[in-house]
Amino acid sequence: MSEYRSGFVTFVGRPNAGKSTLLNKILGHKVSIVSDKPQTTRTQVRGMLNSPDVQLVFVDTPGIHKPRSALGTSLNATAQKATAHVDVVCLVLDATAPYGRGDAFIAQSLPADSIVIVTKADMASPEQILKQLTATSELSVESWFPVSGKTGEGTDELVAYLRNRMPEGPQLYPDDMLTDVPDEFWVAELVREQLLAVTREELPHSIATRVTEWDWPRIRVEIIVERDSQKGIVIGKKGENLKKAGIAVRAQLPDEVFIELFVKVEKNWQHQAHSVEKLGY
Image 1 (cartoon, rainbow, N blue to C red):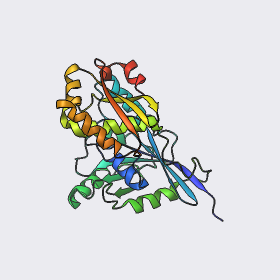
Image 2 (cartoon, helix red, strand yellow):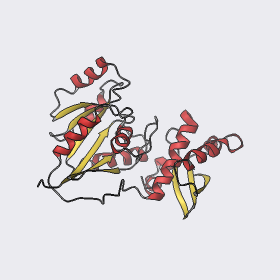
Image 3 (cartoon, helix red, strand yellow):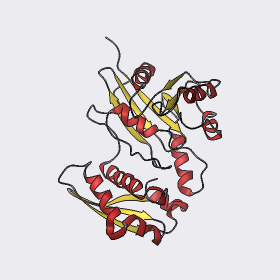
Image 4 (cartoon, rainbow, N blue to C red):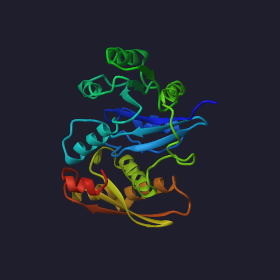
């Protein structure tokens, strides 16, 4: 009888490399919010993939970038901490973006037994994928995997490889646990995701969200921006943006849930370490 195996797999990479989309596809469930904005993922998000003899615990991380604020510094630290004491570190690269100094900076601190995952294979040409594989060919890594987080192409091979890399060990989380993200945090993240979609390019980093009341099925979510002008953008003409976001969030929650959205201005919150910490980032 084979021994049970379990372990942690961390995804690291630049912003918008496709880490969260890939994680959601592998798990078959949405555990990490997704947008095309940098700094969408702001905390470590763990998602569990179970089979009868192996449990994989995936760790999604914020994109590592050149920080320009207290928030950026905190996000980088969160991502870098996630590479310690795990079983496999995966450098996630966007096949449609050139391998650059940011990627090389991340790669230089990878453990020797890391792997490279080239994402967005459905969008990239074979030549683009080959360029990424060639650019990373001299890294001291174990293997390379071109995949698509959208279509699932290549993910079966990736997961099979990761299962074999797991050491013998006990089950780390219950079978029915898909993620360690608390419900309150998850709802706040859904609100932020939909606001990023609604406001598009107008508020790339300035939105934060938190649940201030949880009296099921009534939930109050506070939306924090940095300036009064941003408050108007979030609310939209006649409240249109808030309404769109609220409808999209409710569609992902049980029918009985009622969500109240309120907007609050906290001047330059992302540049103040105490505000970043208070918001859980």
